[in-house]
Image: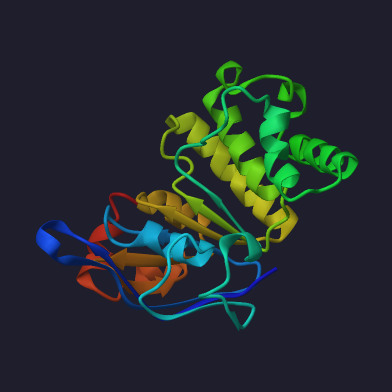
Length: 244
């Protein structure tokens, strides 16, 4: 599995009236091999931009992004061994669950027999073995999100990036899939970064939690350290005891 490091990473986007919007300001972040890091903060704080930069879907204006000590700023997304799961499951409605799971392997020209074996193995791991012939419209919300997760995992990435994958689910499904995410993380030994706006979710899932605001990281610490010693007033307010 991979170590992830961002060093002095900045990113701007074009804004209204020709003004640039600073999404990230000299962000530094290190994620250890096999660690589960949760990134939490209000909307527009730079959480998703951070994931997209690691995935290679955006390029930094300044700073470096490294995987296992190798700078990957100019490495295309397909060559980074990073998989990303989005808030929307984005499944192809005309394909079965099996075909959706296998799509990335097909694009990478994995031999058909090997791809089928890997898809069935992942389906067993995610509790989808009985759903493989169904199309997305015939699946529940939780099953669709499991297919989206399995589509990323079946590639056997070194780093798994999760961009609020549970936010569109109701509370019972969210709780169940939180447990699934932790189980998969432990069983597969993945380096995992989860973005969420929900402090309770970040504290429940993250071995460490990075609190972001306004394009900067306010604090990175374990859940216990954040509760006991918030570094700023914003961290204390965002992780208010009434939420925790």
